Image 1 (cartoon, one colour):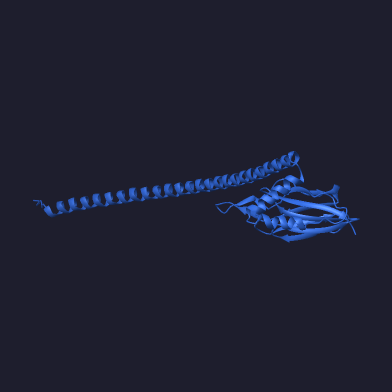
Image 2 (cartoon, rainbow, N blue to C red; image 1 turned 135 degrees about the horizontal axis):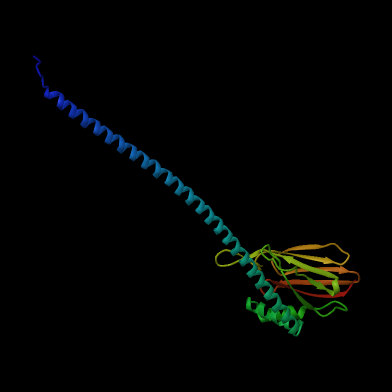
Length: 241
């Protein structure tokens, strides 16, 4: 005779064990999905950051190239302006009346600066040229600056007896940017190169005066401010001694 024993606690334990197994399985699956999602998200984030860094680098290169192009265009535009002024000056020189027009222009500029007409008349009346002097002549040339990219400009006197050129400090615009033309308020360097002689450099704010002897002639120079970018050299020569 067998006796059947029924244990209700075992059934509840089995259910609790199964429920715990299911909960642990769900937690493990959720942790695995969460970890995989986080890893995929981090990889995508790193990839996006790398792409953005590459795009930023490319944009910086494009910006640098654009800035270089703008700088080149500004320099070319300034040089073109200087060349235009030079062409205008050459045209005026060719179509002018010569020394008389330059003399009247110099007188007008001095009057504009506040010098009285009586003083100018007194200075002119005291001017007495030495023996056998030539008539005064005026030539113009560009005062070069580091920003000027145009052709070399010189004043050639008496068929090359003396060659004159100058360099100066660039002027600045309202934004503080350097221009191609020189600042007449700053010191300039004027170089006088006589034929067969040693070059002489004179520095200072215009006007600048100089005299030199070439063979049997004494040349006398006065270098003053001209039109924008230009200096004017007025000269004559007399017998020497």
